[in-house]
Length: 208
Image (tube, rainbow, N blue to C red; front, side, top):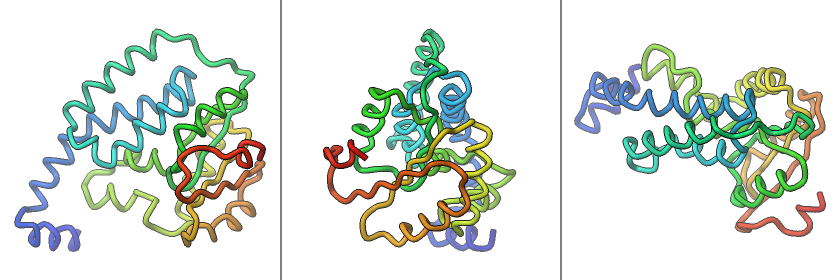
């Protein structure tokens, strides 16, 4: 809380004003988490839609009013769909959002697999908002220890009945070290993919 107050003073505002903005953004975050539920629980939203709308909660595409309106329309549209078949593989995506994300999600769905858990993207939506801005960001796992992330990941893998995990690491990023820890702690098949500046899947990655 001290750090937030100091930051607010530096930016010539106040922690109370920041809390007001937090409250204003809360409906958008709630809608994003509703889409997440439609993805894993009801099978009415795709892994790509889940990725796109959850990752966008980082800045709400610079217009949270428009974000909210467009997401409400998508949620209504999702409710009219037939759910995905229960035969499809249920996959988790952990790690930073991929540079070739759009290609990856569509490729998986063309081959009978769907992502029902996007780890970091979901964290952007602040699934544990708490009672204050300080508490909300204390619950936000991404900046902290990999073991804090692991608690969240293992809980969600079980809850969402995941069959396998894709761990994406960005080339030359220190977070790739965590792959060893994940493989030791997660009792599921894990495929590690590394990306750099390729915005589309290579044949090598498709084969893997």
